[in-house]
Image 1 (tube, rainbow, N blue to C red):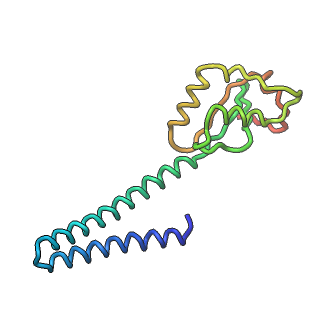
Image 2: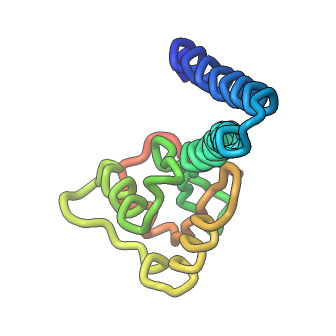
Length: 160
């Protein structure tokens, strides 16, 4: 996050807290009940707003960190060969469509659309949902046959 924005937030928090303490102190010294209760009420209101902003900031920070977690996609063949799909997908962008789009970006030996039978199975959708709901960096393994992996023009497949 930008340092200028952080300083601005700190100044706002400190100002709200100091203002609420000042109002509470002034309200305590004034002998009229109406003004006293008004100032104490404003004081506690400003303090509540400062605490609310702080809690919202923490929740937002956690949500942004979770959205930025990386998910990698690997085409996995039964003979212990893995082919990593180039690039990682941010959790915020992770969906079935994004996975299929990334696989579609792999060069093909022959023009046309790729075909992987695992992508039509319920287990694939279950894995997508499980990874989307989980936390931390994850890897989606897509099970392929040697023939299915052979349709891609891949110079670098590596053993597990």
